[in-house]
Length: 499
Image 1 (cartoon, one colour):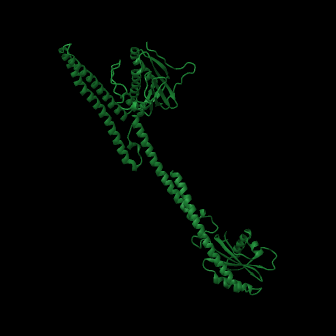
Image 2 (tube, rainbow, N blue to C red):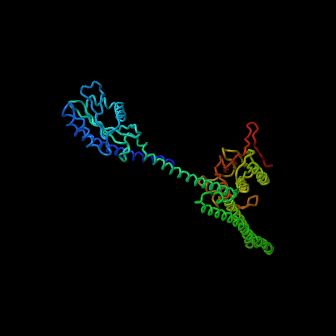
Image 3 (tube, one colour):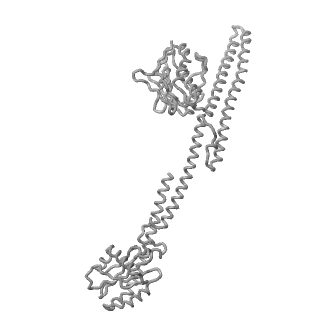
């Protein structure tokens, strides 16, 4: 955009100034032409008085009309001349060398002006004919006014030195004038300075962006101040460094507070749970009211215990996002490990595992955050799949991303709630204990989305046909790491069935 402005603005200004300059040059030409016409009208009686005008008188008359700027010359073509261009210089004021007159006359002949004038000897001819004098100066012929007389055709020629009239540059293109060239040099210098400053600031901001990206990925060394070499951005760099330090400290404080709060709540919960045993022994079997009260207390303790664990997971997830460390992670190996860890759950629920995992898929991220995502997706699929059904897991590459698919055989989710299932505390089932002893509070998928998006990926849910839910996760591949592709004849796939 800046380059476009620097190109378009001077073009617009040049066109406007050129139009104004053309108008000024035309005014000057008309003024000089009027001066030549007045001279011709004053000399007409002298040259028409007889067939042999007094040349000395003509010289004196030219001296009357000429000034410090204008040079006046008188051309004559006798009526009996055979040569159509046979004009001769009769007089001039101020007196100029014959060599200069020869150059000027040759220029007029080359332009066809003398031959045109010799034919009719009529019509004023304004012009801007520039030539170099033998002395090295520049002379500009501005008008040629003919006078028809019995003796022949006379012509009054006006000219002036190129630098005699300020602002006049007859015969020179506007772009070649000194003013335009000086302005162009100044403008180019200003443009160069602007682009140099812009490039320096842009380079400094790019360094800031690289540093910020490195901080967000957890692999940064140094500070913004060390990356900056622009004095104007020094204070900005210092503020960024302070902000990063505060974020790191906040992440540490959140982790510490999560551990302290969990420990503080776990202790009284454990004490209450242990205190229930003596009470249980004192209640008679037929005391239904007392037994029901104990059951409600135990259920509330279980829920409170789950809430404490969930809150700790939320705090740790928040701290992980604030201070994320990204590095190459072997996603294929991690998926295998987590599937192996769930083998006992699959066996108890009589669930089969189908799909394949492409080996050598390396992504950029934090292993603990990715592990939390996969665990939550697998646990969610297990909890919704009926016993004896199957769970599908597939890992492969899609362009510059790794795609992980986890599908279950459950009832699916209403289309209107496909986005809401990633909201915190949203759940379509009552809080209950599953076969693995966990309690569901609707934060697993919320944590999964936060972790995936913090790592630069995406996650979305889709309903399967005829039933079930599919989770699709995309994570960025690690740059420069070779990815093993599945063989077309012997696919690099894993298919496991729980026994």
